[in-house]
Image (cartoon, rainbow, N blue to C red; front, side):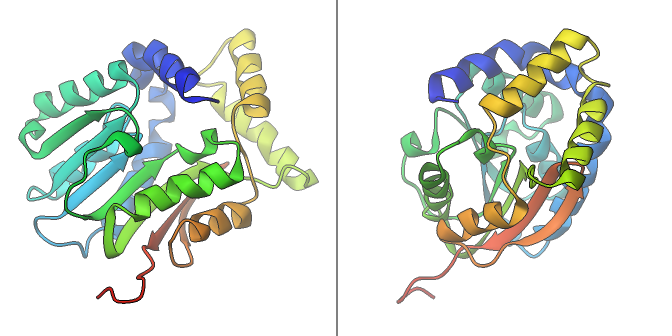
Length: 237
């Protein structure tokens, strides 16, 4: 999926996005619960980069749990970013947020971040070198040893067992996409627009982007999440 497609797709979904996926919110909440613990050792005034922030659900969780943290939301969809901003204003932490419409390469240079999130984002980059470059761009924004928490759909779809799990996953998705037509569109999107790779391959791509060996800390169906530290280069503390 190219950049214009991503922007258009999520602009169209923004108004009803949270409501549409509300029946599956338990999956997100479990991931976010663990995310808070993954980031628990960060400084009291940590600076967090949220790449593909969407409507800002993980920012809300972290802002409420860590009232001294500051956030930069990077989101190419103006409608999604507007929803993210509205959530922050409604919940009272907007003054600790910076909202950037666009991609990471257009974010003005600033001091390094302590940590970053990237949830269900890199899976839309089908070219592996570009996907590695995506993670490298995040690594370049982090301080040495800075943490990345990322999640993507991952599965070895050549395996009979994983094909069986894929059918279970689609039945799970059907609770949020109840019509036959919507579910068929989702299947087609997985085949055309989503780079579902075996978990070990996703981990290798993250490492090639400038991170230490990722640690998987969450799985629910096809969603896998990892945390990893930015690899320090020679001369860095």
